[in-house]
Length: 134
Image 1 (cartoon, rainbow, N blue to C red):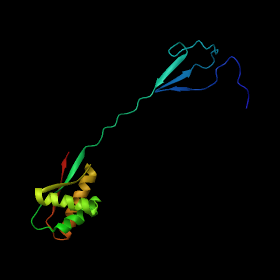
Image 2: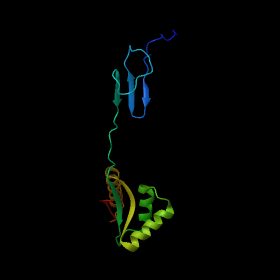
Image 3: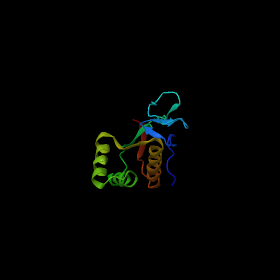
């Protein structure tokens, strides 16, 4: 490695917060320069702000025909609920007519609603699953 030549500035970049200070090459290293002085440049980087996606509630609706055990099975299978939580949600649906299974982005909520409805129809149950914007 060759020694650093005296009297000239090495090609280094000094990073401070969001600004990048780049020295003008070829100037004498007098130590008197400051950011904004002639021969220097300040480059700022901006981060794009991303917007959070809208969330949707997935809801089960009560009916008089779907067995409670089937509702618990749906909650465990499609919403990854443990048996106790699934039972609690099922009882809430039974007593109040509607219950929240989870909160998801639009695509995930739509997929879960479709999966539950298809599974219910396949097993000949009228269980209804809907989504609404939170």
